Length: 397
Image (cartoon, rainbow, N blue to C red; front, side, top):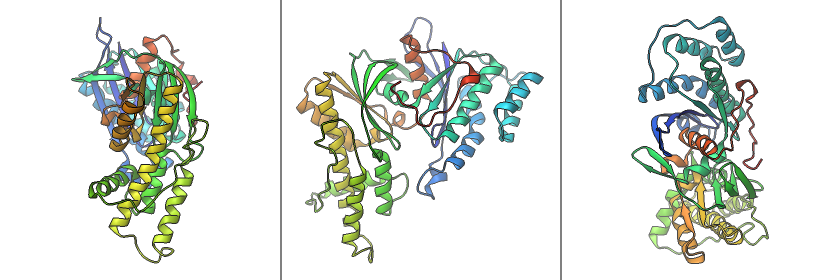
């Protein structure tokens, strides 16, 4: 079984190819091509959907070729694309003339690869960006006559922490359900009870800013570059290493609420007021020491709320495994503190994080999620014509 997967939910264009060898339950990564848009959006301090869409459209076919070439499945063979297929490409890739021309050239140059499924992210995310990947999946599915598996982006983040990797071979760990998933990224902060792959119950979510979004906003307040999370964490780490007493005490929003929801807007506002007061209403610049202390105070507060809410949920729902996914799962302070806290509070409960490169958006996680669905008989291959982008798609259906 071979699965070609496509990810274009935000600012990473990803194409990967996974194969399950005959007689195996593991997946081998045959090809993986990824293009980041961080440099493109850094000058604006955030992602612009229209720019992201154009960048995806420029990269998706070259990356598909690169991925297939890595897998030794890009075989040249002169052919002529039929009129019906050409019209299909034109009708799907409306207003994307360059993408149309590249697809026509691609199909006229290379033979159909031996692929069983195409997996594609259909949401959540930026809809203009999602549509690029979906339209590419539609075209490939129709021209090659290969079924499509629509994948929820957040489910991709769930499965990345549930697999073990050895030499590009991915094996799903033997985990006892239910599993508690803490999903933290630039657009999401959720606690999800995973009853099986494909069956999810969202028990808590942010009521305003997501964790990663809050990190980015605080970074802008401190004059730090985009993306803000790594920059804030670097300063926070430097402050803790100094051994100095923390002069700032930031609020822990909703820490003691009787639910599993989160809120980071109040913490963000507290940072804004602290900076205003320190700089005499912005009449002077923050010192480097003030910036590092503020970064640590913010990170301490945000991470404490995430950890204690997660531990409380794991205890209530008797979960033996906590998995953490999403871009913020790459935060080393979150990893260190959560593992330490769970070991003391809930001994015996495992805490799993993905490999750092799998924490950010990529196509491998989309292929893994599709395979998890296949493995557990919880997927329905969808007609390419019915695929739609849903920017607000929930993992709990």
